[in-house]
Picture 1 (tube, rainbow, N blue to C red):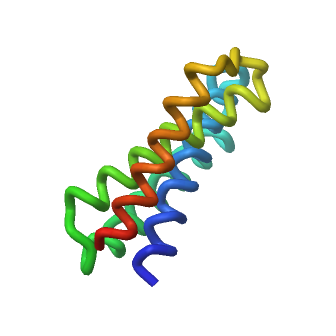
Picture 2 (picture 1 turned 180 degrees about the horizontal axis):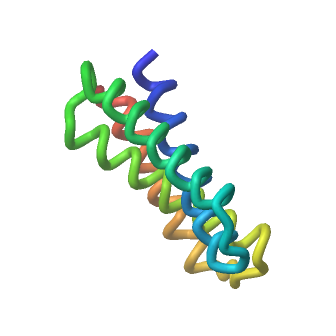
Length: 104
């Protein structure tokens, strides 16, 4: 269950970053509240996962999911450049996350 919580924490972090980009374009209370809710849920799920998983591994996986997720959102939704080097390094992050899962 803690691994599912950790994945949810990373997804909520990505959602929070996406909402921050929306807020940059359209400043309103609903988007701002959704940012707070997204990051709040991210921290909630992260703290639940950290009850049983080691802190270093939990944080590394959480930031990895957030980094790769935000980059993919930028590529898919905002047309950011998806060069071979960028995709290669993102795949290294994903491989590292899988490796950490195998170790724990």
